[in-house]
Amino acid sequence: MADKTREISVVVIGGSYAGAAAAKQLGVLSKKGYSGLKVTLVDQSTHYFHAIGFPKALVDAEYAESAFLPFADFFPNGTKHEFVNQKLSRVVDEHHVELDNGQQLYYDYLVLATGGQAPGPINVVGRTKDEGVAEIRQLREGLDNADSVLVVGGGAVGVEVAGFVAEKYPGKRVTLVHSRARLLPEHFRPGLSNGAIDKLGRLGVKVVLNDKVDIPSDFGYASNVGHRVLHGTSSGNDYASDVQILAVGFRLHTEYVEPLEQVLGHSLREPTSGALRVRPTLQLENSAVPHIFVPGDVNNLPGSTKFGFKAEMQGNTAAGNIKKMIASGFDKAFKSADNAQAVAEAAPKASAWSDYVDLMLVPIGPDLGVAQVLKIALGSSGLANLFVRQLKSKDFMLSMRKGYFPKSKKAKRE
Image 1: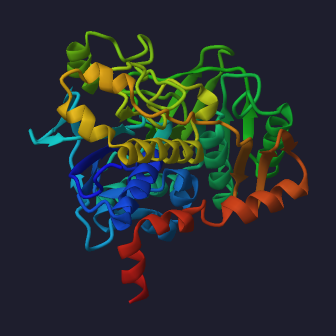
Image 2: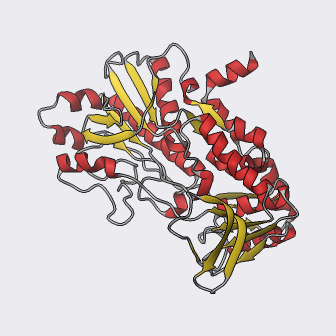
Image 3: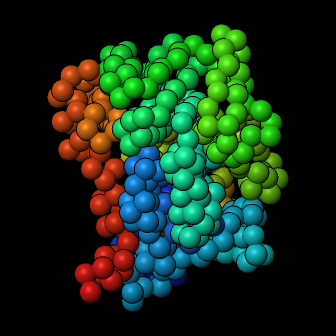
């Protein structure tokens, strides 16, 4: 049995859904005899932002304040674990990463949960709570003063934003334009789209399908406050509005693995998207680095997996596999091996991540919504409203996330 008191360094890059889940689960090992374990969570922001709740934060200032949780409170007191407020610069080699400030961190296990640049203002740019709250407030104030709002993109984010804006501002003209033939991801049932169109219509939202909006190169990031006319390239329509919110596009930035690719002599990324190629176990595809895991949006798994709760599930799977490797003593053998490749190939069998949860909850304002559960679409029905309201609309599951920040909860009680 491997020595539990040995020094073990786990570095987790990215503190959103996948990274936070992995870091939290691995951190608990220090209470189970692994006295030499240190988990380091690295994120460029000082606070976790509950991005799933952005539609509610946009129209509810109090909720927006509560949706930012300090990473300084992530790990409980009395452990070696730490949070480092920096951005990853590069993965130097099989055991080192370098941060933007030049600091290098050694790792026995690495979790790359850097995610991607999500659609629209859901991806808050500010790196502090004050900056993030101000960013959302500026857009909210633009909505306060607008007569018309254009939302571009009819995925879950676009539908939720359009619904919450229309419910909050019933006198404003809200238009949602989507480039495809139906709303929401197409791997879900058509009834979900039909129900969303119906319930958006009840709130006065005009839905336009099959029209791609041309976004000018000078358009501000994610949203714009100020009268603009955007052009529909498919229909030829012009869409005039006082506020424009983009809920389209998803970009990955994975240039940080270039040094590691050079060391390995092997590409680790998809040539078009830049997504990191993984095995079903969420390990990097290259067999020489079985101690590097990639959960969440940054990997090359199908688009149907790109949801916050599924990223969290992947983070848990990655952590579970690292636990197996730690228990086997893999890190000690790999670190001291003359033939690292042979040790890597002898790594304990990892578990594959299973995308077994068929669930979609889409609030459309605080009282309406559509859902899919076990391939059953709850679209236009009142049951969908009740289901979504109970499970998501109230706080967009923020209360569940607060459990990741024990010191914040303790301070609030005191």
